[in-house]
Image: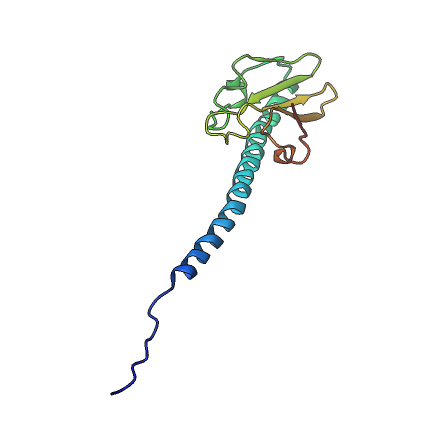
Length: 150
């Protein structure tokens, strides 16, 4: 009689359990990092969308217009900013004007409710600020637009 050697065909249970554990550990690290990345990119996008109106606002102010509407600047809706920052017309006082928008709609839950404010000083310089509540992280704010988290 011949000796039959048994050849392994597949993985053992412990090998499969190790692979599942490794995938679980990687997912536990990667998912929160990805969620932070999405939140940060959405804040940057919203700041960019609002900043796009600065040129049109400047143009209207240079024309001597002191009350600026969404139509004046070509406002379009955004999935991140469900309520128009132009619901109330902007009124420039001595060349100073503020444009504020609250994040919501399709915004990540960590940034929903944060308010981005672009302010034009009477000198013509613009500033940006974000007011938010936890779980908003200051690291979500783009450079040049600091966040205050309460």
